[in-house]
Image (cartoon, rainbow, N blue to C red):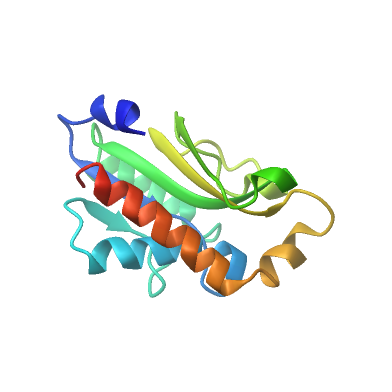
Length: 154
C-alpha cells in the first residue's frame, strides 16, 4: 500500500467510498467514508451512510470527479466477493476498481487506486450473501480499511 501511495504524495487525495447502507455486505464503503470523516482524514471523502454512492448515482459522481478533481489521486473503496479463502482480506490495486464487479456489471474502472474488502464468497446468490452478511464482520473490515489509510498519512 505504501508503495502505491508514495507515487501520489504530490497530489490531492479523494476517497470515493462506494456502496449502500441498505445492504449489510455492501455497506463497507459508506462505513469507511463515515470513519474517515469522523477521524479527520486530510482528504476529500465522498460516499457515506447519509450520502452513499451507488449504481444509481455513480455516473453523476464520475462527472463531478472529472470536473472538480482532474489530476487528483482518486482512491476508490468498495466491498467485493472472492474466493472462500480470501474472505476477510483486503486487495489493493493500481488502476482503481470496477464498482458492481461482483455482479459483472460493466460500470468501468474508477480511481487511480482501488481498495477492495472481500466480504463474501463469489458463488451462488451473491446478492443474498450481501444481504445476509454479518454486520460486525463488515464493520471490522471497514475499521481495517480506515486504519490502513490513516496509517499511511491521510
